[in-house]
Image (cartoon, rainbow over all chains, first blue to last red; front, side):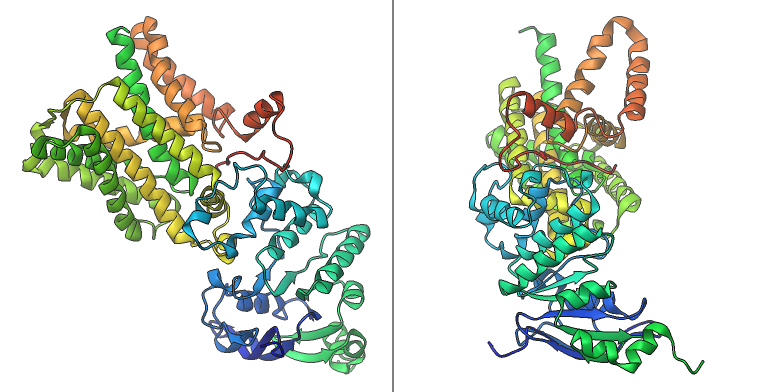
Length: 254
Length: 292
């Protein structure tokens, strides 16, 4: 399966009632690639993430991860099939510490009863905790391990979400507006961090409005408008595409 | 030990067991108002087992608890389809149904009540109450407990991270019911007599009340709630008939000033710091908070 794309959508459609939110969408993400999914508000970007992570079922089409069809796999099992994600609004567990939130990220790899009943919050230096601490260290958050997450700044919480999402052992990480609400310094840090993550072999798919961020991070861009793919290519290529310019700025003819 | 002190201690320990019966569902975000029904199931089952088959009262209590656990696991399938206030109503109704079932079961005496022959004293109750607390405290520190907090706070995210949300909710409900069943068995075998009137909604509500009073963020909250709820009326005994009025005022004031309960994560963390713990590897963040 080494040559199969990490993520592949074939003719995916989604309607809510009579409203077609995604129409016949197909694209591929190659292993190790940094891909952006962009488009005006309401283009259906977050819906694509929700379809891939299984929050909603598709109306038509197939979704494959590492060549395996996951279209009918329940959302609960998709992370162990290789897809992990973060959320547009931060979705950390507010009443757990930072470290415990990152421990939640290991859950997709837990299957045996002995692991479920392992007192992970009691044993001080377990391999689970060491792994989670390692993830926090790489994110530069080690000293916050014991803090309660809802006391922390927004940018830090976003970083914790990424660290948590990575520990599930997924091949492809879907990030929904990772740079939203971050100051320029934090954005810069995040971009460096995501580059490192991609260099270590995790494929990234990013929904993002900040085009500068997209241009600096991603090598491949898929542009959506009203649920349809209107362009695909490198950031420079899609920026020249007349339909993209039209979607973002409106057409001259009006 | 005087008979008075021993009597109070028994009530206190039974209340601790009942407190954890209510705590488990609350930890998964469920308000169970039918706990009295499960207490009754355990009480009648264990009494029947020890009366009719002559098995050890301790085994009968544990067996009664296990059967109540399995019964609740089955009941959880339809009951947990409801959420929030509707779940509270469904469990309330379940409690009522169970109570009227006891009332009509002639094999265990129906309305006349059911005498229990075998006896369990203070020591036996104490050992089992401590075991219930330790099992809860241990489970809360496992990955099972960690995932339970996640299920309580955010079902959608728990699901995406591979937690079987329904299974966790059903298990929390059933573990609570199992403890309720054990407590019911202990009660029957100590007081030597059980009757359907014992298992009313009033009983369920007072247990929920003192668990919320103690706080559901940490595993110590229900323990503290049970202690307060049992001992305060005794301390106020000097004021005769006014003691329940004073007690009620105390509860209302606590709910206004500390809706999160008497003991929370914050206090536990402060205590740990005092003893030099809390650092290294983020051992803090002990326990959980309830949104009510």
